[in-house]
Length: 123
Image 1 (cartoon, rainbow, N blue to C red):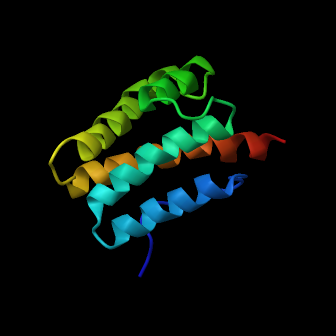
Image 2 (tube, rainbow, N blue to C red):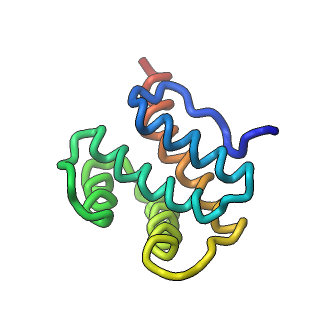
């Protein structure tokens, strides 16, 4: 069975790496709500790994990543999609669609590449 999404190189935090792999594996077995939940949690873990305070709200972490310029100006729409889909999966009685899970996984992959892979390639 092949995994959804692509590998992201140079993730130097095991929790972040494991959550991304969990999201990829979840998509591969059609566990689309799990993908959204993993990606939401992943954003929080990335922010904390980069220096944000622990035990804050999800929106705190999104705003923190934005203030610290980890979210590029033209990327705010897709980070908002991760937030929206993840919030629905967390707070509403709904099942995440394959399309929304795929978007969430792709957007999360791009954020991880911006935060981990691309800077390491420039060194």
